[in-house]
Amino acid sequence: MKIVYLNSSGGAGGLESALFDMLASVREAEPGWSLNLIVPDEGALAGRAREIGVGVNVLPFPPSLARLGDAGAGGPAGRGVGRAKLLGQLLASTPSALLYARRLRRVLEGLAPDLVHTHGLKTHVLGAWARPRGVPVVWHVHDYAGRRPVMRLLLRASSRRAAAGVANSESVAADARALFGRGRGVRVKTIYNAVDLERFAPEGEVADLDALAGLEPAADGTIRVGLVSTLARWKGQRTFLEALSLLPEDLRVRGYVTGGALYRTEGSQFQPEELKRMAREFGLERSVGFTGFVPDAAAAMRALDIVVHASTEPEPFGLVIAEAMACGRAVVASRAGGAAEIFKEGADALGHEPGDAPALAACVARLAESAPLRAALGRAARETAVRRFDRARLAAELVPVYREACAAGGESEGAGVMKEVLSGE
Ligand code: GLC
Image 1: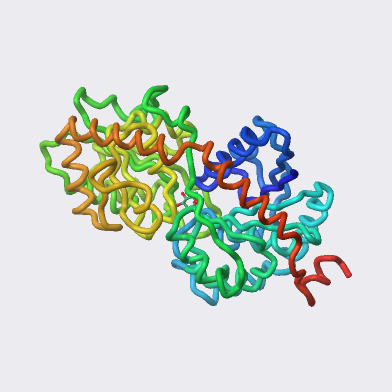
Image 2 (image 1 turned 90 degrees about the horizontal axis):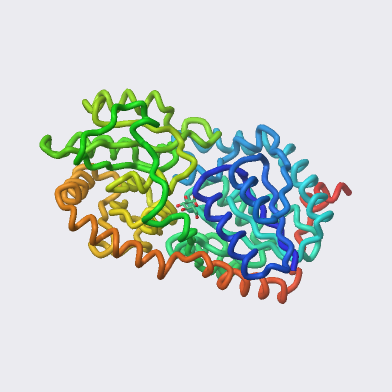
């Protein structure tokens, strides 16, 4: 079997980590298969994929396409960007998208896959239109497409060309089914993400977060609390900083914001300077550090006593929660969307309502005050991760989806102008 994976970034976001683990899992379960990855840029995913024997093709996006609805940004579409502006962006990028899809089709024809597995909303559309005749495309949805006005239109219009759908949580599956499920004939199956349980483990290297943040080493007994995420605004950096400012003064806590600005979409992410200013406004200049992006996320998590996930919008899955659980950390997560499906409140993590800074502060204070509670949650979290997030499960669930899609064969070909433009007729 020959599979080509498409993603809209070769870099280092959550989606890219999740995809890497799928590649690794399938590679291990089916060593005889040929796996290829097509991404628009070089980065951590592209490099790590090569290391495990996946062929990597870098096919750069034209700039207007790169800016269009950056898939990894995750949050609700059009946030801070008006609908009209989005439609403008879409129109402006149409000619280059068509050209790109043509080039993509040529690359796909050269690779001659049995199946194409796409990740990222933009990539689903491109993959659906660029696939060679008769090759099934599986859409693996990592975000709420229904919240993105432009993407939802494009996905619906392309759904006849998708053989099957996969979603990273039940919550995302429900959103996807409403868009292109039953009525439109795309079956959507939930496959939860997984992590590398050896890499994300309680024991291992520990990052020096103080040094990375340019702070003096914290005094002994200081409880380290960190938000590990990209700097996308909906990841809740503000809620986290506000929660830290609400902690009782006698608690010896140091906060860390760990993450970098990854996306190209304008306005959807914080710049580090903005966050530092916000921390000063909350009176936290001496009690919060900004480490920037830390490539070894597991080492960063092991340096923390409490890992916080604070997304202010429903989180499609929240890979960082599963990773922190696998590291045996005490986790506080925002209880909405797919994230709410991956932990059991009070048993293997604590939860708070999205955006509720006082509730988050209460969870952090409870954990900071009790080493036994942190240890008990951390132990249970690791057990849950071993039971639910072992990446060997990924191949066991994906391979049947691939086989079924291939058995169903190439279904209807789209017609009309798109087809003509793409095939250069
Ligand atoms: C997207 C989602 C995130 C999920 C990741 C991997 O980035 O926003 O919640 O963890 O994909 O599926």
